[in-house]
Amino acid sequence: MVYPKKNDMVSLFYTGKLDNGEIFQTVKEDRPLVVQIGNSDIPPTLEQTIKEMETGDSRKVRVPPEEGFGPRRKDLVQTIDNEEMVKSVDPKPGMILALEVKKDGEEQKIPATVIKVEDSKITVDYNHPLAGHHLTYDITISAISEESAN
Image 1 (cartoon, rainbow, N blue to C red):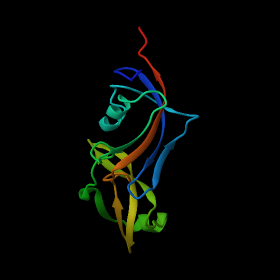
Image 2: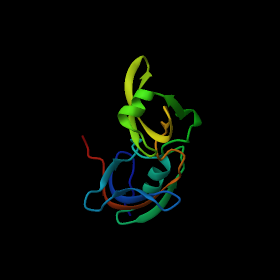
Image 3: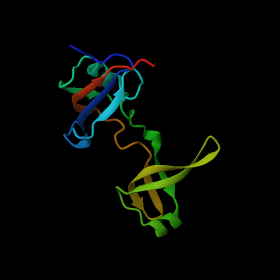
């Protein structure tokens, strides 16, 4: 039995689902994702499960929001009063806008999902769309490459 260990490269494919069954991501067998064990590339719960698997094994792993895209934050839902934006963009609920915000003294464009539009007021959500969700992965390991001696 060969289990992945620190620094090994693991090729895997998976389907990621939300609790309601909605698929949020698929990595197919013909184009596997390659991760390095111990590199913090993936959530700890997922990595620990992979370390207990062999090539060809399949498992279902549920990742809590704290290890995924974080909890939903109410402070990231904001209402903007901008008549010019409403006229030029014509925002609708569900639309994703790239809004400029100041962070560390620099202007950055951040994606925000439009939640509601009333007259010149737009309510937007800066949370990642998967924030606050448990993520379930149906994973299969297709290959394990041991760390090469350098």
